[in-house]
Structures are given as structure tokens and as C-alpha cells.
Length: 170
Image (cartoon, rainbow, N blue to C red; front, side):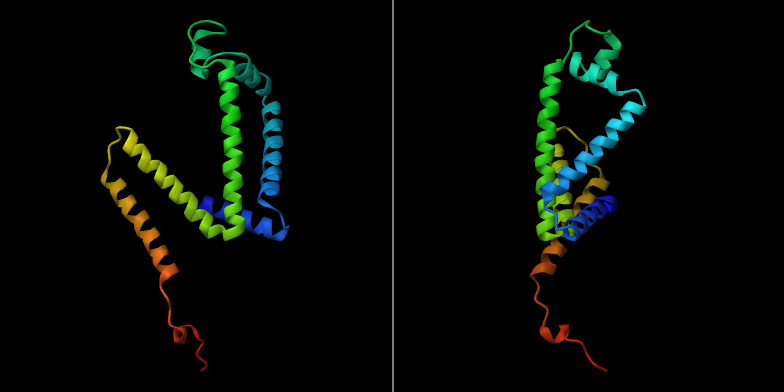
């Protein structure tokens, strides 16, 4: 949560300081990250083998390693993996743009609350859809999370009398 808040605040400061739109910010951030990753994979000698595995051969990594090249039944074809990466990347960029837009328009706090709520909803859905055991720690976590949202909502809707807001001199 600390890093999530740090990234949101940093993003807000950069966009305001340089008068930058959220899509411009995302494009520069992703381009820089891509170049660093490209250099790192090239330096480690993993670029060619990664391209060969991902785009030119069928199967998951475990299937690829256990069966050798071109043998056995595979769950993913090379074209299926390419389509999945394209969809994942496109939707990720769209989501990142929406997140940056929230940060730019409403600020880092609203963005942190939004992303935390989204993550909590994902966890709730996983409990509803899959046979997961619910521990006492899960119940406590839900209580803390919902209490925090409730208090944030109250803070935004409670009117503070004006005489309490005036500075007292002296």
C-alpha cells in the first residue's frame, strides 16, 4: 500500500509539474520501461530465447521444457499466446490511462481509494467464484477495509460548523 500511494502521488506531481496529460505520461513511462527491459533481456542473453519460446513455439513454459520442441499436446498455440499478450497489453494500457486520468483529475488519494476498492472487489469475487477457505484474518481484513471506506465517506459528508474552522487569535 505504501508503494501504491507513492506511485499515485509521484504520478500526480509529475503530471502537474510538467503540465502533462495522462496518456502522454503513460506513453513516456511505458516507453522508458520497455527500453530498460529490452536492454536488460539483451544483456542477460534472454531476448532471443524469450522470443523463440513465446512467439515461435506452442505450449506453456512447463510444457515447452518437459516435452522439448514440437512434441506432445499443448494447451496454448503460438498464435493464442500472441493474441493473449495483445489483449492483455491493450486492456492494461486502457486501465492505466483510466487510473492516470483519475489521479490527474481527482488526486492521488482518490486514486489510492479507487485501486484499493478494485483490489478488494477482486478478492471478494474470488471467494464467491472459487472454493476458498475464509479465515478469521480475512474477516478482520474485510471489517478494517469497510470501516475505512465508511469513515472516508462520513468525513466527506459531515459538515463542520464554521466557528470550529476559524483560527482563534490569542
